[in-house]
Length: 250
Image 1 (spheres, rainbow, N blue to C red):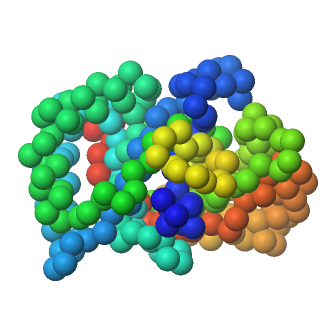
Image 2 (image 1 turned 90 degrees about the horizontal axis):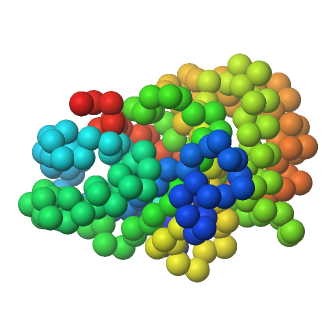
């Protein structure tokens, strides 16, 4: 888990339960699953692709509400894994049904994954709240993850409100980022991270445009005014995200 926090990953709300925070009465929190994996000796992404193809067929038949991505580090120092698997469900009920089916119907595919990657060292559950999020499931792109710590006396509610405000500010400047607030709920261990801010782009050119807005067009100053009074967020780690399956696929 130490590697995960150094790299920053997981996703949103808090142990009070799905969707029951005062963060936003009309905003639905969604469960997310993160696994950090290392390739076994002699195995490569090509081997993993063969298994993910089989998993896609399994999900299309048995788990239609599930979405998944493979993440590979692009800008990260000692992430603690070679590749990560991130999955998401529309709600807690879908999560529970999905996990039961996987443990009974997915054992064969799970065994094939185990012949390619070892994911035993890192498995985290979290919840996710949208900031600037698309209606459809995001597919291939770039994911930035910022580990954040609340300032003394501040709450997750206040942090979420600040990120909503900052997200709208950057959107008004023309940013094409999608973003969420992630809070670990299980498997995170003794972490000093309170939540993660996740920002996603479909293209590096869109990321570059937002970097320019942030650095040279006032975005950094807005962050200081809006985010810094509530929380301190580390510089992000950047991952390439490859869609394994979108919930809308079937």
